[in-house]
Image (cartoon, rainbow, N blue to C red; front, side):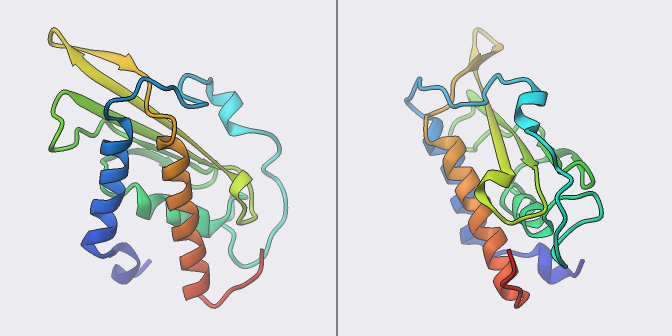
Length: 164
């Protein structure tokens, strides 16, 4: 990977951080997958074959890189490129020090498709010096997934690959 592939305009990173911070503020709606067990989030078979845009483990390389790029404003706790799993550590937006977020992104397939990606967003708020789980805004998870998909498609277009 080149240094260029790790750099993004500051506006894109700030925008992603803003989506997480603003989407969760003032809402008590839950997202699908907030408390879903990992086996439900991982979905079905990840063994489909694909073209040049694949990692050796069976996940789409553009989705994988798009997820890493999109979530790069948060501390990354763990990654598994073969299994297609990215987990962040807790992130506290600078403007809201009494709430924090954690994201898990799962790339499920070799194809660049919206159903090849699952995102789970976890939110906690501080109450009496303790962190308490609380739902995220309804659109937070879908907004982050859309940003990952947009970045993945941009990476594919930049690479000149229009397959899948």
